[in-house]
Image 1 (spheres, chains in turn red, blue):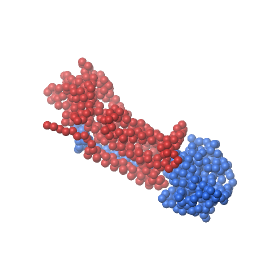
Image 2 (cartoon, chains in turn brown, red):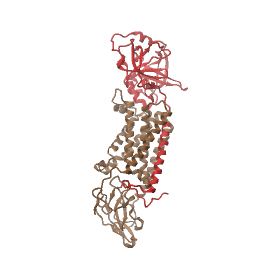
Image 3 (cartoon, chains in turn purple, red):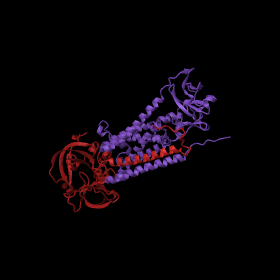
Image 4 (cartoon, helix red, strand yellow):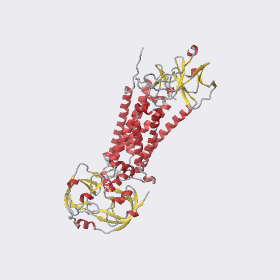
Length: 349
Length: 256
């Protein structure tokens, strides 16, 4: 008997995802351009494109930032998370096109280098009404470029997951910079209430969803105060764990996913090495714990991905005593095999 | 409240998507599609109407007249009464004035090729440099310059926005305001004639070319104030159909 493992590259789900996302982006641009060209015939083509690309990029960024907390609050949104990085690259492409068109339109063909003009064309930082908005946009675009350029798993593996994840948390800095770019730019320039309300609605939605998701996550991070026996913590009864699934408990500051499968119980870290996905919300398929975010797999007894993959997560000692599941909060090094706790036949039934 | 379906589990690389989840995702995608259309319409219609002129880009024409070099390059068109139609100002392509192009041509009658920029009664021509004749060094005539000094001066105090006349007259829409500030700054730095755009409470507006106290060009001194509201004093003259404001930038006050 043998099996082979093949790296996941482009697949039908990703293709479908990209086609739908691309269609929605294209639809947005067509509708925006059509409506604005009709209502504002005085505008030049360049201005129309600059506005459409900016509006498209910012709307897409708001959607991207909502997907994460939505998937935390309701697992049915997870398919939207699966290929979110491609949405990010699309958004960066729109933002880059907006930036390039704007620099060509407003900062080129003069006596200064266009980039120098962006940075020093207006130095009135001390007056609220005159604060330059372009540097905020340029800084955001730089962050988005770093994220788009390192979005492939090649960089995830080479930079290591913690560094990569920290870098990509920069999206929130970029979001804040873009909000400032919009406030000190078009909102000060036009004082349009409709634009202001739309911006406010987007920001409020992003903040609210993150707040709700954070509150839910905080509940998971409550430290287990249950009975300790020989250093083991009573986390739940066997019956609390559905077959081939897990319960998640916080032990010594770390979330632990306790899986029940085939008459055994194993405990591993809840944090996927790929993108910190919640392994405890996954399930066991073909003998492996499958991460619900991107499908990374780990053997429940070793915490290691099946060869040739090399991801490893910490494992924990587990006991089952009188129908109760006990987990030792001290983690073993990632990939360390731990003997699963065996359930008795009666309990299994 | 929604409860997770114990049977369905999505793995991106292992199609097909579970049926109930697939139906949910389809509904979400349709919802996002509707949202996208609503946001696109809202944002597109949320922008305010802008005033602007026209730039006949790609449609150059020939213009014949007498070159006026100071304070800013202009062309006194043949057969056109400047009291009826202000003579066109001349600028170079990009964010550059035409000073270097017309230097030494003051008072000379020429035919040039350029692209018209127009807003209301005011016209500007973006000159194709190759269409101008070779420079002359001693051909300056005082005829055109003399025509500048026509009307009485009137002392005024005004508040308005410092704009670059090229973008304002139609090359850019918006050609004024905060989003155009750096572009205006670059244009003035490059020699585009500076102007003051003023509006009264009734909505009437005027564009005044700005010159220094002795009638000298002041584009370089206006760079820092480009795109900003300024309160200033000076005296107004009419020259070639344009309102020209003599003012000293040293005494300009920003209105933040």
